[in-house]
Length: 170
Ligand SMILES: [Zn+2]
Ligand SMILES: [Zn+2]
Image 1 (cartoon, helix red, strand yellow):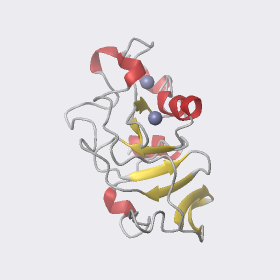
Image 2 (cartoon, protein in one colour):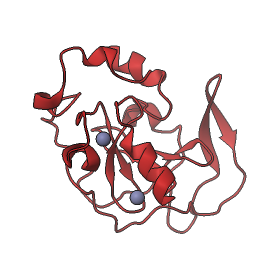
Image 3 (cartoon, protein in one colour):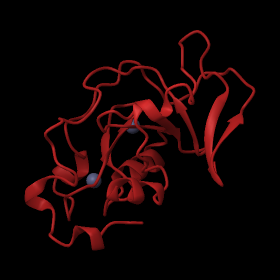
Image 4 (tube, helix red, strand yellow):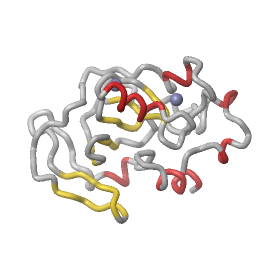
C-alpha cells in the first residue's frame, strides 16, 4: 500500500501491474506501431486518443538491459540506492526512478535524448514517452524483463539508509 501511495505521487514512477493495464493500454505491434491510444496523467488516469499510427521513436527491439540495478548507482554515484528501476527502451540503460534520490533514468533520457522509458519492475509492463508524457503498452524487449525477483525495494540493501522514506522524492 505504501508503495502504491508513493508511486501515485511521483511522475512516471508508477506502480502499474500487468493486470491493471491489460485491456486499457494499447498493444504495440511492429506493423501497426503505436495503436494511437495512450494514458495521460491529468485528473486521474484518462485515456486519450492520439489518432495516429506512427511507430514510437526510441524503441529498439534488440536493446539488452545493462544489468540488474541502476547503472550509475552501482558505478559509485552516491548515495547509491534506488526505489524502483526503469529501462531505456532504446539502449537498455537501467536507471533509478524519479522517487529515487538520484533519478538516473530521467537524467539518462534527458541527456542522451532517449525518449522512451519502460519499467524494470516485476509485473509492470508500461512504457512512457518522456517528451509527450504519455503512457502506452510497448513491444516485448529482450530478456530479462525485470530486475531479479529477490532484489528488495529499495535496493541494494547494504546501501539503503534506515530513514530512506524521508529521503525519497515525492
Ligand atoms: Zn541511480
Ligand atoms: Zn538509453
